[in-house]
Length: 172
Image 1: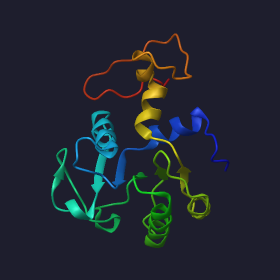
Image 2 (image 1 turned 30 degrees about the vertical axis):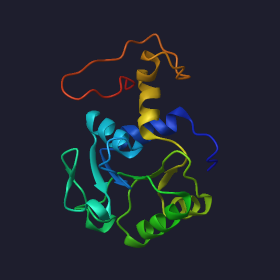
Image 3 (image 1 turned 180 degrees about the vertical axis):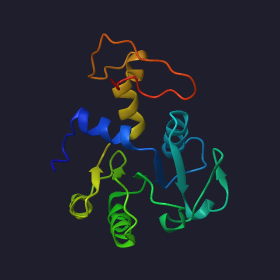
C-alpha cells in the first residue's frame, strides 16, 4: 500500500469499524498530545486502553493503564502508537508475534516505519502512518471546519446529532 497518502474512504472505514483502541505511549500529563487524543477519542465513544509501564495500575482519564499490550483483556480493534519510528518497529513485531492481532495499527504524526508497516500488512493488519486519529476524525466529521480550518471535506449535509456520545454524521 502507498503510505504517502490515504483516501478518505480508507480512513473513514477504519474509524467506523474501530470500537476499542490501545494507546501505546499514553500519558497522564495533561499537556501531552497523547492525553488530548485519549480524551477526544473517549468523548467520541471509543473504549481507549492506555499503555504505559510507568503508570501501570493507575488511571488516566478514568481508564486503567496497562504496562503492555500483553496485559490487555482482549485484542483491541486499533493500536495507536505514540512512540518514535524506531520503537514502532519493535511494537509491530511484538503485535505480530502475539497472534492477538488488531484490525489496524495506527502510527501517530511523525511516526513512520515502512518495513514494520509491510510486516503488519503481510499479517493482515491495516496500517496508517504519520496521521492522528483525532485530527482525521475531526476532519472527516466537519468539526475542524467549525473552527475555521479547511478540512478538505465539503458537504451541504448537516451533521446528525444523536443522544449520548456524538459520532461522525457521515454514515448514510
